[in-house]
Length: 319
Image (cartoon, rainbow, N blue to C red; front, side, top):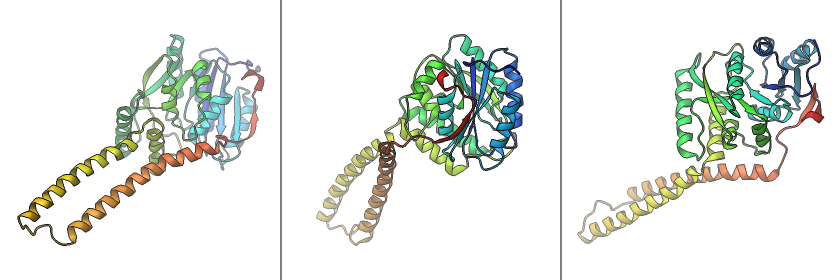
Protein backbone atom coordinates (compact mmCIF):
# COMPACT_ATOMS: atom_id res chain seq x y z
CA UNK A 1 0.00 0.00 0.00
CA UNK A 2 1.32 3.43 -0.90
CA UNK A 3 2.21 5.87 1.85
CA UNK A 4 -0.60 8.22 2.76
CA UNK A 5 -0.59 11.88 1.90
CA UNK A 6 1.15 14.09 4.51
CA UNK A 7 -2.11 16.03 4.74
CA UNK A 8 -5.02 13.62 4.40
CA UNK A 9 -8.35 14.89 3.20
CA UNK A 10 -10.21 13.24 6.10
CA UNK A 11 -9.34 12.20 9.64
CA UNK A 12 -11.49 9.64 11.44
CA UNK A 13 -10.92 9.90 15.21
CA UNK A 14 -11.93 6.97 17.43
CA UNK A 15 -11.22 6.83 21.20
CA UNK A 16 -10.42 3.28 22.31
CA UNK A 17 -10.68 1.84 25.82
CA UNK A 18 -10.56 -1.95 26.15
CA UNK A 19 -12.04 -2.66 22.72
CA UNK A 20 -9.93 -5.65 21.63
CA UNK A 21 -13.02 -7.45 20.32
CA UNK A 22 -14.04 -4.53 18.10
CA UNK A 23 -10.90 -2.92 16.66
CA UNK A 24 -10.54 -5.23 13.66
CA UNK A 25 -14.21 -4.80 12.69
CA UNK A 26 -13.99 -1.03 13.19
CA UNK A 27 -11.04 -0.84 10.80
CA UNK A 28 -12.73 -3.09 8.24
CA UNK A 29 -15.94 -1.07 8.12
CA UNK A 30 -14.20 2.32 8.13
CA UNK A 31 -11.94 1.14 5.31
CA UNK A 32 -14.83 -0.16 3.23
CA UNK A 33 -16.71 3.11 3.60
CA UNK A 34 -13.79 5.46 3.02
CA UNK A 35 -12.28 3.56 0.08
CA UNK A 36 -15.43 4.36 -1.93
CA UNK A 37 -14.38 8.03 -1.91
CA UNK A 38 -10.95 7.42 -3.43
CA UNK A 39 -9.54 10.30 -1.36
CA UNK A 40 -6.71 10.20 1.20
CA UNK A 41 -7.69 9.72 4.83
CA UNK A 42 -6.28 8.64 8.17
CA UNK A 43 -7.76 6.64 11.02
CA UNK A 44 -6.60 8.13 14.33
CA UNK A 45 -6.99 5.64 17.19
CA UNK A 46 -6.57 7.15 20.67
CA UNK A 47 -5.69 4.46 23.19
CA UNK A 48 -7.20 5.74 26.44
CA UNK A 49 -5.21 3.59 28.85
CA UNK A 50 -6.56 0.22 27.69
CA UNK A 51 -5.37 -2.75 29.75
CA UNK A 52 -6.41 -5.46 27.30
CA UNK A 53 -4.84 -6.21 23.88
CA UNK A 54 -6.22 -3.07 22.21
CA UNK A 55 -2.84 -1.37 21.70
CA UNK A 56 -1.28 -4.57 20.36
CA UNK A 57 -4.08 -4.93 17.82
CA UNK A 58 -3.69 -1.29 16.79
CA UNK A 59 -0.06 -1.95 15.98
CA UNK A 60 -1.03 -4.96 13.92
CA UNK A 61 -3.47 -2.82 11.95
CA UNK A 62 -0.81 -0.17 11.39
CA UNK A 63 1.62 -2.77 10.03
CA UNK A 64 -0.96 -3.63 7.37
CA UNK A 65 -2.36 -0.17 6.83
CA UNK A 66 -0.16 2.93 7.32
CA UNK A 67 -3.28 5.12 7.31
CA UNK A 68 -3.86 3.87 10.86
CA UNK A 69 -2.22 6.25 13.34
CA UNK A 70 -2.00 5.79 17.10
CA UNK A 71 -2.01 8.12 20.07
CA UNK A 72 -1.21 6.22 23.26
CA UNK A 73 -2.10 7.83 26.60
CA UNK A 74 0.05 7.20 29.67
CA UNK A 75 -3.16 6.22 31.54
CA UNK A 76 -6.92 6.47 31.24
CA UNK A 77 -8.00 10.11 30.95
CA UNK A 78 -11.60 9.61 29.84
CA UNK A 79 -13.62 9.50 26.64
CA UNK A 80 -14.07 13.26 26.18
CA UNK A 81 -10.37 13.92 26.70
CA UNK A 82 -9.52 11.16 24.21
CA UNK A 83 -11.71 12.92 21.64
CA UNK A 84 -9.81 16.14 22.39
CA UNK A 85 -6.48 14.42 21.79
CA UNK A 86 -7.78 13.03 18.51
CA UNK A 87 -8.72 16.54 17.39
CA UNK A 88 -5.29 17.81 18.46
CA UNK A 89 -3.48 15.22 16.34
CA UNK A 90 -5.86 14.99 13.38
CA UNK A 91 -4.41 16.43 10.18
CA UNK A 92 -7.36 16.19 7.79
CA UNK A 93 -9.33 19.01 6.22
CA UNK A 94 -12.42 17.40 7.76
CA UNK A 95 -12.35 15.46 11.05
CA UNK A 96 -14.96 12.83 11.89
CA UNK A 97 -15.42 11.76 15.52
CA UNK A 98 -16.83 8.26 15.96
CA UNK A 99 -17.12 5.82 18.86
CA UNK A 100 -15.12 2.63 18.50
CA UNK A 101 -18.00 0.40 19.66
CA UNK A 102 -19.69 0.57 16.23
CA UNK A 103 -22.97 1.86 17.64
CA UNK A 104 -22.28 4.76 15.29
CA UNK A 105 -22.20 3.04 11.86
CA UNK A 106 -19.07 4.05 9.89
CA UNK A 107 -21.17 4.02 6.72
CA UNK A 108 -22.91 7.20 7.95
CA UNK A 109 -19.57 9.01 7.59
CA UNK A 110 -20.28 9.26 3.86
CA UNK A 111 -23.49 11.20 4.58
CA UNK A 112 -21.60 13.57 6.89
CA UNK A 113 -18.98 14.17 4.20
CA UNK A 114 -21.68 14.81 1.61
CA UNK A 115 -23.12 17.60 3.77
CA UNK A 116 -19.63 19.00 4.35
CA UNK A 117 -19.06 19.20 0.62
CA UNK A 118 -22.28 21.20 0.38
CA UNK A 119 -20.61 23.89 2.50
CA UNK A 120 -21.51 23.01 6.09
CA UNK A 121 -18.64 23.27 8.57
CA UNK A 122 -20.06 21.10 11.37
CA UNK A 123 -22.29 18.13 10.55
CA UNK A 124 -23.71 16.18 13.48
CA UNK A 125 -25.45 12.80 13.39
CA UNK A 126 -28.94 12.74 14.96
CA UNK A 127 -30.20 9.49 16.45
CA UNK A 128 -33.49 8.62 14.82
CA UNK A 129 -33.61 5.30 16.65
CA UNK A 130 -31.46 3.73 19.38
CA UNK A 131 -31.26 -0.06 19.11
CA UNK A 132 -30.26 -2.29 22.00
CA UNK A 133 -30.64 0.36 24.72
CA UNK A 134 -32.83 0.01 27.77
CA UNK A 135 -36.01 2.02 28.22
CA UNK A 136 -34.41 3.75 31.22
CA UNK A 137 -31.29 4.87 29.34
CA UNK A 138 -33.22 6.02 26.30
CA UNK A 139 -35.76 7.95 28.38
CA UNK A 140 -33.19 9.64 30.61
CA UNK A 141 -31.09 10.59 27.58
CA UNK A 142 -34.07 12.29 25.94
CA UNK A 143 -34.94 14.10 29.15
CA UNK A 144 -31.35 15.27 29.57
CA UNK A 145 -31.13 16.74 26.06
CA UNK A 146 -34.44 18.55 26.44
CA UNK A 147 -33.38 19.88 29.84
CA UNK A 148 -30.01 21.16 28.66
CA UNK A 149 -31.63 22.87 25.66
CA UNK A 150 -33.91 24.79 28.04
CA UNK A 151 -31.32 25.85 30.63
CA UNK A 152 -28.33 26.73 28.45
CA UNK A 153 -27.74 29.59 26.07
CA UNK A 154 -26.52 27.35 23.23
CA UNK A 155 -28.72 25.36 20.90
CA UNK A 156 -27.49 21.79 21.37
CA UNK A 157 -29.36 19.57 18.90
CA UNK A 158 -31.49 16.92 20.65
CA UNK A 159 -30.63 13.22 20.35
CA UNK A 160 -27.07 13.81 19.18
CA UNK A 161 -23.84 12.39 20.54
CA UNK A 162 -20.20 12.96 19.70
CA UNK A 163 -20.58 11.38 16.24
CA UNK A 164 -20.04 14.33 13.92
CA UNK A 165 -17.83 15.92 11.30
CA UNK A 166 -15.96 19.18 11.86
CA UNK A 167 -14.24 21.29 9.25
CA UNK A 168 -10.62 22.17 9.98
CA UNK A 169 -11.65 25.73 10.92
CA UNK A 170 -14.01 24.35 13.56
CA UNK A 171 -11.35 21.91 14.78
CA UNK A 172 -8.83 24.74 15.16
CA UNK A 173 -11.40 26.65 17.22
CA UNK A 174 -12.11 23.63 19.45
CA UNK A 175 -8.39 23.11 20.00
CA UNK A 176 -8.25 26.43 21.82
CA UNK A 177 -10.90 25.33 24.34
CA UNK A 178 -8.92 23.59 27.10
CA UNK A 179 -11.39 23.36 29.98
CA UNK A 180 -11.01 20.17 31.98
CA UNK A 181 -14.63 19.08 32.46
CA UNK A 182 -15.39 18.63 28.82
CA UNK A 183 -18.71 18.29 27.05
CA UNK A 184 -17.50 18.06 23.47
CA UNK A 185 -20.89 18.06 21.75
CA UNK A 186 -21.65 21.34 23.54
CA UNK A 187 -18.25 22.85 22.71
CA UNK A 188 -18.76 21.92 19.07
CA UNK A 189 -22.01 23.88 18.97
CA UNK A 190 -20.53 26.78 20.99
CA UNK A 191 -17.86 27.44 18.35
CA UNK A 192 -20.56 28.40 15.86
CA UNK A 193 -19.92 27.97 12.12
CA UNK A 194 -22.49 26.68 9.66
CA UNK A 195 -24.03 23.52 11.11
CA UNK A 196 -26.54 20.90 10.06
CA UNK A 197 -27.48 17.33 10.94
CA UNK A 198 -28.17 13.99 9.31
CA UNK A 199 -30.42 11.31 10.81
CA UNK A 200 -29.30 7.73 11.38
CA UNK A 201 -30.23 4.61 13.31
CA UNK A 202 -27.87 3.96 16.22
CA UNK A 203 -26.91 0.29 16.25
CA UNK A 204 -26.45 -2.13 19.11
CA UNK A 205 -22.96 -2.37 20.54
CA UNK A 206 -20.92 -4.79 18.37
CA UNK A 207 -19.17 -6.46 21.32
CA UNK A 208 -17.94 -5.79 24.83
CA UNK A 209 -19.71 -3.68 27.43
CA UNK A 210 -20.66 -0.04 27.74
CA UNK A 211 -18.05 2.39 29.05
CA UNK A 212 -20.79 4.68 30.37
CA UNK A 213 -22.56 3.06 33.34
CA UNK A 214 -25.10 5.08 35.32
CA UNK A 215 -22.51 6.73 37.58
CA UNK A 216 -20.51 8.03 34.62
CA UNK A 217 -23.65 9.13 32.83
CA UNK A 218 -24.68 11.23 35.84
CA UNK A 219 -21.20 12.78 36.03
CA UNK A 220 -21.26 13.46 32.29
CA UNK A 221 -24.66 15.14 32.60
CA UNK A 222 -23.34 17.33 35.44
CA UNK A 223 -20.36 18.31 33.29
CA UNK A 224 -22.69 19.34 30.49
CA UNK A 225 -24.99 21.36 32.74
CA UNK A 226 -22.28 23.12 34.75
CA UNK A 227 -20.24 23.87 31.62
CA UNK A 228 -23.02 25.79 29.91
CA UNK A 229 -25.51 26.93 32.56
CA UNK A 230 -25.62 28.90 35.81
CA UNK A 231 -29.23 27.92 36.45
CA UNK A 232 -28.45 25.57 39.38
CA UNK A 233 -26.79 28.47 41.18
CA UNK A 234 -29.62 30.81 40.28
CA UNK A 235 -32.17 28.34 41.65
CA UNK A 236 -30.59 28.81 45.08
CA UNK A 237 -31.30 32.53 44.87
CA UNK A 238 -34.86 32.01 43.66
CA UNK A 239 -35.52 29.44 46.36
CA UNK A 240 -34.12 31.81 49.00
CA UNK A 241 -36.60 34.50 47.97
CA UNK A 242 -39.46 31.97 48.06
CA UNK A 243 -38.51 30.73 51.56
CA UNK A 244 -38.09 34.31 52.80
CA UNK A 245 -41.53 35.23 51.45
CA UNK A 246 -43.14 32.18 53.04
CA UNK A 247 -41.38 33.02 56.31
CA UNK A 248 -42.87 36.50 56.32
CA UNK A 249 -46.33 35.05 55.72
CA UNK A 250 -45.70 32.51 58.49
CA UNK A 251 -44.60 35.20 60.95
CA UNK A 252 -47.74 37.21 60.24
CA UNK A 253 -49.87 34.08 60.70
CA UNK A 254 -48.22 33.21 64.01
CA UNK A 255 -48.69 36.76 65.35
CA UNK A 256 -52.34 36.72 64.33
CA UNK A 257 -53.00 33.33 65.95
CA UNK A 258 -51.19 34.26 69.14
CA UNK A 259 -53.18 37.48 69.48
CA UNK A 260 -56.40 35.49 69.37
CA UNK A 261 -55.11 32.83 71.76
CA UNK A 262 -54.87 29.94 69.28
CA UNK A 263 -52.71 27.04 70.56
CA UNK A 264 -52.14 25.17 67.26
CA UNK A 265 -48.54 26.30 66.76
CA UNK A 266 -47.29 25.80 70.31
CA UNK A 267 -44.55 23.22 70.99
CA UNK A 268 -41.23 22.23 69.39
CA UNK A 269 -42.38 19.88 66.63
CA UNK A 270 -43.14 22.64 64.15
CA UNK A 271 -39.86 24.39 64.92
CA UNK A 272 -37.87 21.15 64.55
CA UNK A 273 -39.45 20.27 61.20
CA UNK A 274 -38.83 23.78 59.88
CA UNK A 275 -35.17 23.76 60.96
CA UNK A 276 -34.56 20.32 59.43
CA UNK A 277 -36.23 21.37 56.18
CA UNK A 278 -34.20 24.57 55.86
CA UNK A 279 -31.01 22.74 56.87
CA UNK A 280 -31.54 20.15 54.14
CA UNK A 281 -32.16 22.82 51.54
CA UNK A 282 -28.99 24.66 52.59
CA UNK A 283 -26.90 21.48 52.31
CA UNK A 284 -28.27 20.78 48.83
CA UNK A 285 -27.33 24.22 47.57
CA UNK A 286 -23.94 24.08 49.30
CA UNK A 287 -23.38 20.91 47.29
CA UNK A 288 -24.30 22.71 44.07
CA UNK A 289 -21.92 25.55 44.91
CA UNK A 290 -19.28 22.92 45.71
CA UNK A 291 -19.67 21.39 42.23
CA UNK A 292 -18.93 24.73 40.58
CA UNK A 293 -16.14 25.53 43.04
CA UNK A 294 -14.51 22.16 42.38
CA UNK A 295 -14.47 22.90 38.68
CA UNK A 296 -12.84 26.28 39.33
CA UNK A 297 -10.20 24.51 41.45
CA UNK A 298 -9.47 22.06 38.63
CA UNK A 299 -9.07 24.89 36.13
CA UNK A 300 -6.79 26.92 38.41
CA UNK A 301 -4.37 23.98 38.73
CA UNK A 302 -3.81 24.27 34.96
CA UNK A 303 -2.67 20.69 34.52
CA UNK A 304 -2.56 19.35 30.95
CA UNK A 305 -5.68 17.58 29.78
CA UNK A 306 -3.75 14.40 28.99
CA UNK A 307 -0.28 12.90 28.87
CA UNK A 308 0.80 11.02 25.75
CA UNK A 309 3.16 8.11 26.20
CA UNK A 310 3.78 7.37 22.50
CA UNK A 311 2.51 8.21 19.04
CA UNK A 312 2.92 6.35 15.77
CA UNK A 313 2.41 7.62 12.23
CA UNK A 314 2.18 11.38 12.68
CA UNK A 315 4.01 14.07 10.78
CA UNK A 316 4.13 16.72 13.50
CA UNK A 317 5.04 19.49 11.05
CA UNK A 318 1.74 18.95 9.26
CA UNK A 319 -0.44 19.95 12.25
